[in-house]
Length: 336
Image (cartoon, rainbow, N blue to C red):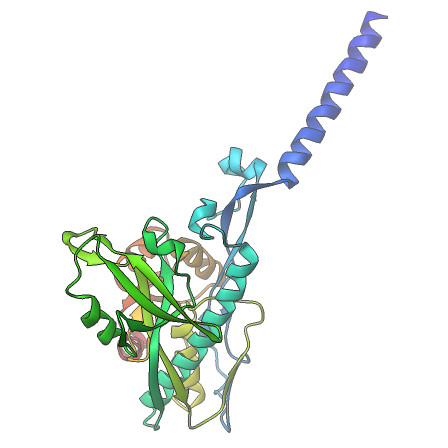
């Protein structure tokens, strides 16, 4: 009788443990997981009016990252996470009061902006006339630990500072140069189709306690008039980090041998002046490019490049600061 009871207790305990493990493996926690995705060729996803890229053994590759809620089992047991994944606190993904769905909408808007800028940069490099009219300063991100986080969000466009009109990044820097940490500044913003006023308090810059900053990263917002229609469709991928591969592929579609027979992966936000800016998720992107069998991975110079090298394995990492430099590098290494 005792043996039978013990057996049932053991079976019951095992069943309970299985249920607990199942719940831990499926129930999401509050934080997020950044998970690598394999890099994919961008050919076929970019169309330039009247043009077609040459087929060949190489290609331009883009890479993205899956951002999802971490499951409790993955949160408690790091070895249960996908290879190359990173646990990220919820507050680093969504600002206070912001939903993840809202962040997705913002990321898709950032992608559309990135597509337009990439097209303008590539067409200009091809010698074509591209008209751009500055219309404000786009807020790309807001630090979570600054007062401005309560008033600003990515996607806002600054069009005025303390009653003065602002249309360029240079004008914004000039208008805020005389501020001291703790000063308040009145910002005029374009949010969707509305214009609103917000007052934010500055803080000291991390590298200089005497220099005031708002705590935002910005880029130029502009009306862009392209001489050719350029259509890009990456499905549900969002964010600005595919700007560099977009520009490389468009340039290749225009008849330039960009990849030179190599599988060239790239990441980096691109600005209207052709500069390449840092992106997030570089560890996961490096894992994704490694799994794709790419020959080279172009990444923004600086911290992004340093991180990519830590996880590169045998993958060749090439840091770049601009679109023009990326083209020069690809011409130089193509025969090596």
